[in-house]
Length: 234
Image 1 (cartoon, rainbow, N blue to C red):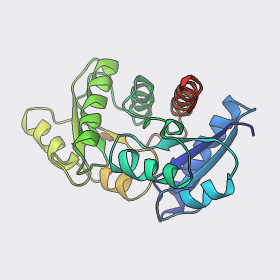
Image 2 (spheres, helix red, strand yellow):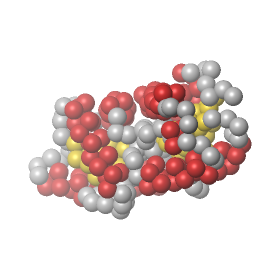
Image 3 (cartoon, rainbow, N blue to C red):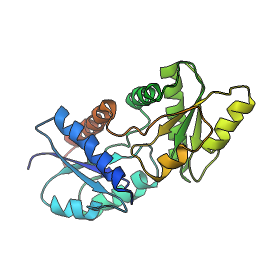
């Protein structure tokens, strides 16, 4: 059967989040018209990952997590779903982040929000109790700092410190009254609304259907396909 890219998003009760995910995947399809691209969600939206894999029975899909860090979903939930579907772990691509293409997208979103070059930036990730995911956000902050040539402080919208509110307040106390907040999120929803409530002077929109993110989805897919092709036969 032809190859299939199965994009796995987190899911949200907010219908705008699912619409944003589908907009991103329309960009992916436009970049590679011959590729079959499907979408599913880990929670709170349909189709579920299990349903999507069942519908692709007989195919050899590559799962591309639409997730920005290597947390519990990537390390535990997705490998378990592959095992249930009797697919090898090599059919799982890495999480999207951290990656320089995301730094490009974040820089564009900050510019769209009006943040000037050189403004101190707080990078607001969703947050996690998983140390690996937190380390990924810190790495992304360093990549964005290199891209912008300035200071970027990692922060977390849940489960970890500092929160974006505290990170922005700390910058203000350190003598930076005008700060920017980069929403390190893929889609609008609860966390994006929370990010918008800090005292930052400029707050960027989520990454959503940015062309650099679409290119990164295909890059992760290609990495996994190459690894699968090079994997010795059992």
